[in-house]
Length: 528
Image (tube, rainbow, N blue to C red; front, side, top):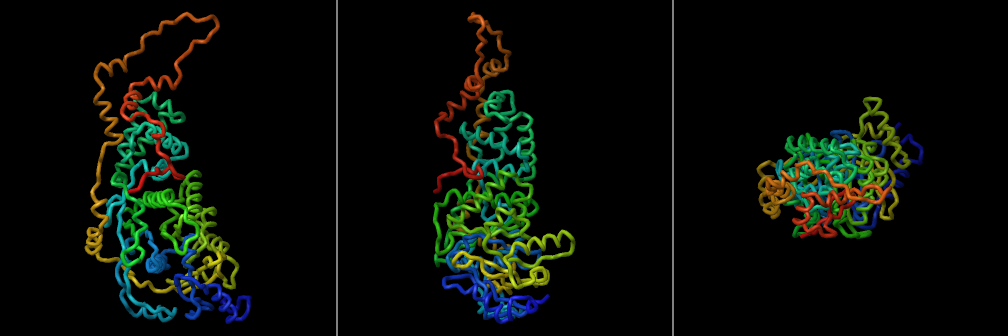
């Protein structure tokens, strides 16, 4: 059914009613122009109010429908308004945001259709790469900072193993064993499963030797796949994502991920670490004239696949609360059903590109997507399967916080280059960055692995022999008739162990030494 055959009034009345919902008095980003009954109306612009960009959003659509160009369009306008942006570049085609676009007939035609005064312009950008794999400034996290919940997601541990990993982190925190890289965590787990560490294992309760062994094997396999490069120092300070250029434009932080796109669970979880780290470091900001940062979370469905209940609860709470700290989060995926309902309910701004309906599952996803939109005069099932590349169904939050009318939209053309920049040019941009010297070279300082190795090396043969020798039979002291034999408590056994005393001497066992952790178990740390 065409738009003109739908109930709701004459076409002119419907167009005016929809268009009036996008007339804002304050600053706004221009997405494109309204489409009704197949015709684009350049006099009816579709926009997003700048202050509402921290109310989160969703950019969805099938592969090849233009999601990446939508991210580019929104990001460059945010930058122009002085808002920093984080972009995950999965396919390696977003580096063009740093270079002016190239005029051609296609761009000129699109600009004329939507009433856009197109002019080529690049944005200030920094390029990053996880662990330095690929083109970009290396982004690393310490294992301690990453925390047990996120690491369990990366290691694909079940709920019991996730809880046990949390106990290992608790033990390392309380003993002053810094978990900087994967070999540190592996050393702590190996120690806890050794003869010497069995008493320590008992002291933290709920962690069986079998489960510890599973965690150790998972860590070993994970490291054997080359994942160790992502964990270590210098750790990336997420405050770098909040910078602006000398001319006042927001810097676009582009995380280049093509080198690790075959490890989707790793990079999606690393993106969650970046967001969680920002969350617990930023102060409350309330309602702002513009966001402090807008964070685009690409391939979002990978984050939710196989996630534990604890992980999803923490993610939902982070998304709900980070808005008040001035950060907007846009999830980018294929259909809204990829995002849990509790998270989807937090996403006030929606840009839905075309969907395909080739299979029964596709049909089901299409119907579910339609149900997530407010009532509208469009036949959304027909519209969503018939839109072309660079077209989308939009609804956002108005300046008053109410949903705008659903608007089929022909999107504007980005002003920046809609293709990757040359690899050599990208490398030059990375090496000329003032951040390169700070993060390029990995540092391996003394941490849990070195401390445990040193303790083992310092143990004298006599001490080892005494520790491994069978205990002499105890002489039973006379005790009143009927009184039970008093055995040393677990605490007394642990405190009396040689390793405990050694560690106590090395770290002082001061009260309050344990690291404070956030919703995701990520460690809080003092910023420079």
